[in-house]
Image: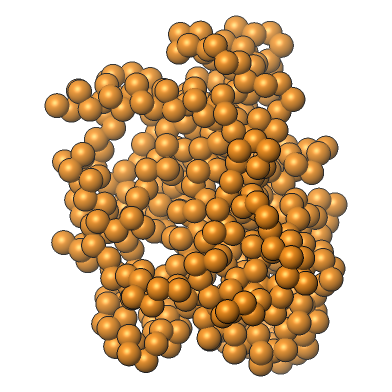
Length: 480
């Protein structure tokens, strides 16, 4: 039975790579993918390598909806139109569609093929250099790392697949690997990717839509911070913040254009969608299904945040609907086509991650953390928090940064991960519990707290179909 399943997965995943490389993300490269490649003919030329990495980016496009849902829906900033939504109530079982990890694993499978096969091409195609080969592999390493980072933060322990689906001998029916081991692999892969990836590209489309050193450093910052490796996170984020040539905060009157337009100077890495290529990101449709939670509305109101609040993050339209990915202008011109780019990392995000890391280090670092926070506030037209300095306790910095990240990054798929990270690293579950519980209706608060008080519930269950397919998988502890 295992052999049959391995053969089926092998054929399916190889087909996925070829199909993906022939469809989306064509805009990344001037050379179009060939449309008559067979498995045996593949991976012999530079064009094959380019087609293959396009396929990996295309796989990433298919992950945006799940990445958003995993990072935002369980948090305290959004409320579904359907008040009985099980996600809103933190009510999950092994049939929950939120637990579907198939798209990230397709991305991982396609990345693995590139990582394994592309290094052999320079020996066959003299026009494709070792350096170019390493760059393509570095892109695939980053994209695989990104997928695994989302999986680890969502499920904790998951199967670690590092082999390409090119042999029937490959065992895809793997047991779970510990989160720490997967994070170690991510750190290793990102270190390799950083060496071989370019700093920049000439075109904005490539600069913001393909992997650069800035994107690698941003992901490294996030990974290190998740593991409470504060010095390492500070070092990685410094590389991004110091690169003022490629990354600048947009001015206040351009803040909404980060989302309404595409590939601004603030963007580090964003998923590209183009309706002319039949690429739809669905962020507009998702925005229509949620309203601004009252707790976030009160923060915007108390701060009188005119840059990021009304008609920017949200608008008043039969309820406070999210506007970031649904609008084209601040004067309520809606996006006609659902092809908004989905931003994975932008400069303001990394600046606040850096502030979080620095706040856990020395006095000088705390001063810089305060400066970074105040730069974000000044850009939003808000008063600076002059009371934070080298003597400010870490827990105060955590509270302030969480508030700033709520106003700056709401609806960008960050909030749940922010809460889990800080509650875990500070060994204070109330950081998460207090925010999530009070964001729910009074009638639901006791029920939500009773589920979240067990920190094992912060990770999703494994889907029943995955457990049936792979007998080596074991359900996550809270759901057993």
